Image (tube, rainbow, N blue to C red; front, side, top):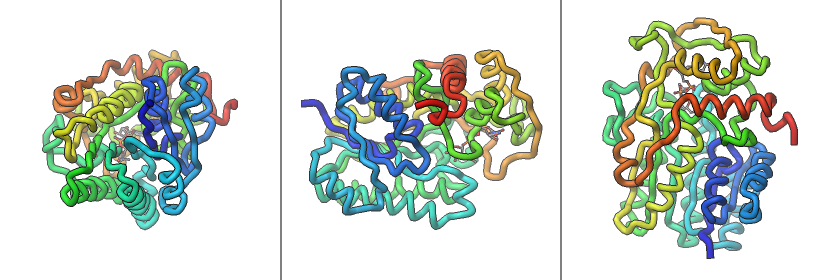
Length: 345
Ligand code: UD1
């Protein structure tokens, strides 16, 4: 019988790509999502892309803070492991509405962990973030680099990491992997899955993509006076399909008896500047992206990229794609779905 994996936030950008990789890998995937910043259409498309494995996907519209609903789900099915994405992720919004972020991300996670414990499901892969490295003094960041959070969103990631460590200390039968991933971009090569944020995109590539399809006039470049090669911020962009494969590698690692509560970076180990990324996207799309130079965005790091050695060594995983493939696939998605999942059904 195939393993059954619960994916919280599985209808979102990264979650939907992981659900597809799970199905293609022969797993059964049960998605829980409150559809706050995601679309059920993504899951319909995942089913189609998974072809004969599509029926192994089921969806439940549940908010993780709804404990009775979660209890009911866990009572109806035995899960081998949980991949936990569900959460709010907009930095600026978290500064304006900290209680909303703490309530959603922390209470959602604690409720999930309580229900997992009650049902004897003690294997978890948690989506942390490279945001926990703050403004690093030294790059590449390793898993041992100092951590700090610059906003409530980042603090929820740090707090959840600590909650997981405490949980494992209290009961060593928990197997937990915390994935600190860098900047996911791109889309499934089919162009049928991709990032579709509600409202004005906060992140670079969704914004660039909306400029390319004519939804916004220009990209505002936040900061051109950094101490980097061209003055713009440097990030570790990772293809979302590589990231999805990294999650599957982490899931497999949970069966290793030596695993307790472990943290891994998922990135490419390479830094790319904002202007380099825009140039790569212009080349892939054939579209000019007009730029407006602006001051630095508060809370932004200058240079952030990670060491991937630990993941390579212990998860046997390494990113395969570079920025050309990321931009090619992102443009394929954008040109087929200029208005995201609302473009078509
Ligand atoms: C951001 C969040 C981070 C979160 C991650 C994933 C901030 C400060 N950080 O990371 O906590 O984990 O998203 O959601 O928001 N840029 C522009 N113009 C834009 C958008 C971005 O110039 O319209 C620049 C930024 O200044 C930065 C780079 O592009 O230098 C990448 O930005 P972004 O895509 O938002 O990612 P992060 O800031 O790395």
